[in-house]
Amino acid sequence: MSDTEQTIIDIIAKTCSIERDRITLDATLKDLDVHSLDAVQVLFEIEDRFDIQVPERDDQYSAGTVRDLVAGVESLVAAKAATATT
Amino acid sequence: MQRVVVTGMGCVSPIGLSAAATWQAMCAGTPGIAPLVGLAGYDLRTGIAAQLKGWDALAHFDDKRLVLLDPVSQYALVAAREAVAQAGLRFEGELGERTAVVIGTGIGGAQTQDQMAMRLYGEKNPRVHPMAIVRVMPNAPASQISLEFGLRGPAFAVASACASSNHALAQALALLRAGEADVALAGGAEACITVGTVKAWEAMRVLADDTCRPFSRGRRGLVLGEGAGVFVLETLEHARARGAGILAELAGAGMTADAADIVMPDAGGAARAMRGALRSGGLNADEIGYINAHGTGTAANDPTETKAIKAVFGEHARRLAVSSTKSMHGHALGAGGALELVAVIGALRDGVVPPTINYLGPDPECDLDVLPNTAQQRRVGAALSNSFAFGGLNAVVALRRWA
Image (tube, helix red, strand yellow):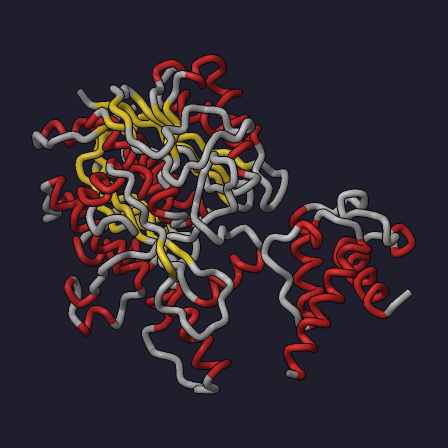
């Protein structure tokens, strides 16, 4: 499991008080009973940890699976690194 | 029990700097949402808000007075002046002691708070303005109105976020009914468009990035607004004794709490508040012709409110006009119900129901007659105004046409 995956799963577990073992990459936040207010807090923690800005409305982040969320964050981090180096 | 009537109204809103101008703008379906101005340089995601247009504080207050007034109090005072002038009241002698002031606000002196934080933490400037406390306190609008007009009866602020105005009107109604006062100045004020407040709303991800489209398909959230509305309420006996012009009857109010979730609305709590307002006003559901909805334009509020209206009104829900004027003046939080009372009183008096603008098309979950985009002429005998706050606090007022 990559560092990004670990970190995001840790954030979901802590923010939503869910046992870490239940959070698989294939689970959606809905499967995990994460309500909208908790989802917003998960996005906040992710933004803060990775120093990125998650788009306002993109279902990849709140409606998709944990894997989708990780992929989204990785692309945002990569985009940020690309801008930083150019 | 005393009946209570409205004999004056005043308002400053993003679509007009008086109640008269605001009502005309509502009938015309005027958009008050525009590009956000005045907060450049703070990396806000939000590009739009419903801000006052052409507000000039110095046109209303001299420098010495302004030092004491956060914008939230400025707006409240200007609205109160218009309402008192319309009511034609002078508060000399005993009437001052028999007049109450109840003003709702969700936040209070938000701009003062924001500037204070900026100096202390941003600029590392250890000095805070000596009038910061009197500007920031949530009771400042009520106190300033009391001071300006010499009102020495019960005076206080009411805070229930987006339901503050309606809770304030309900408290004033209760005071007048109970004989604790003969006259009350009641309403709400908010001046919340500051960096801190906008950032905090952004973080909840409930702000629309295009505009506010209540009950419409494609709606994307709420848009912050600001302003104030203040109303002169009197016992019918007092108004009649002085031959006052009566705008409408404040017939009743219903207040409930959901005790369910800190932010998600609850149809049951909303429905109980509407039923409470009807009961308090001695009104049958089928007497209501118009509901000024809470109608925030969020994914959660609008279907829940639709469900609640159907639960209360049954078949009659289909015949009701339901509109959200937040589509025009935005969500003024603690001032919301007060701005919206201008719409309700206007509808009762003029037989014109203001529209829900920015409407793109029906959402099956919001299938009431929401008066898309254009005002309609309808004779309205009685109306409700809904406000449902974060924290699960609901307040609904009921008004009757004064023929």
